[in-house]
Length: 221
Image (cartoon, rainbow, N blue to C red; front, side):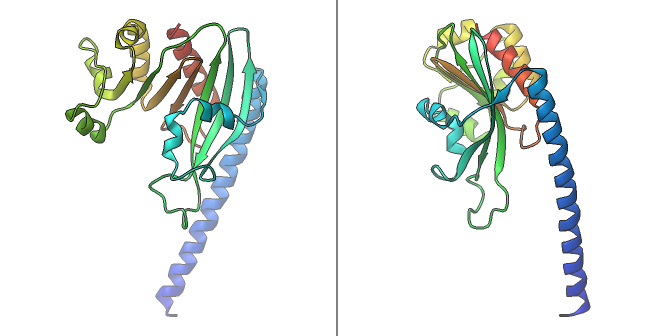
């Protein structure tokens, strides 16, 4: 091993140590903020929501590279009221873009599941539009656009079985909210609502996501 190789390995090890140190500090701060959020909003630790997530066939599961074992639901907390039950959790998964044999850390999406008690919703899905979705739309894939909200229609794909009801329910205030909250995904089923943000990972702010989910849930009433 020559001097260059030795220097390379020393730098690599040093970078790993520094990276691990800052990751540990960030994880500790996250743990504190999580406990503060739980206390402030009266959440409590909850059991797994595996059955609930699979019962409704949410598309978030398709982000994992394979079946169960390539993903899990971690750090589940919940809060109940007369109108709904809130669950906040981390969807931890091996992405399809990762090599399962070499992946050192799984991806995380912090998510909110709202189980509705006082009403029934209609089925729809909203997620950020990308080049692949534009190509699919060119070949006839569904996407509900609003002529009066061109920015919103450029940002998101919106589809569902009842287009008329979707158009009537998506108010100006909700659309403006979604325009200002980039990368959000909503999966609505008859009795529940799943909300997550593609930019909200392992250390995402609980309070911001919770407030966004509450606001969207109220706007869909």
